[in-house]
Length: 113
Length: 113
Image (tube, rainbow over the protein chains, first blue to last red):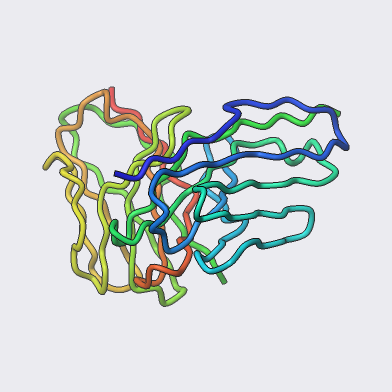
């Protein structure tokens, strides 16, 4: 059974810092890995989707990498801003799980002005 | 247009009530999903509809009854709920292909008294 772990569970940084969020998964047989952002009480916003054949994806100040063989992904946020404060969820779509996404517990990020 | 809409935004109901949650998408995606999310936890998959047919039921209690009247609409009928069913209910839509992302709606905050 696929398990997804995110470290750290919470992170507080001053504005302007570059930061890295980590995601690890136990079964490397995946179709893709996705990073989502969730604001309190709101839905999920897709940030980056990395297919299993890809190594990284970039969108603005965000860069996500994928090392399928080691079961790891990182989300790099450059020059963090208070508006980046949210919970970041990593989700894996496994080859044996059909349409299911397996989510990590999330990292709660606070960027202080 | 990547929008998935959900109504109502908030719902308070008693344990003897019958209510329905509604989800709508006009992106042409043929897979639609219901998730349940408790506070500070990741979303948990409840149901998946693929081409308007129920393809996954994650052993959800029968007091939750999904319905997919057409390719744009997804309903979740609620009856005789328990207080522990209080949660954020999220709808998502996407292509049935495993390489594609899922687009989430803003959710319905349900409180069962």
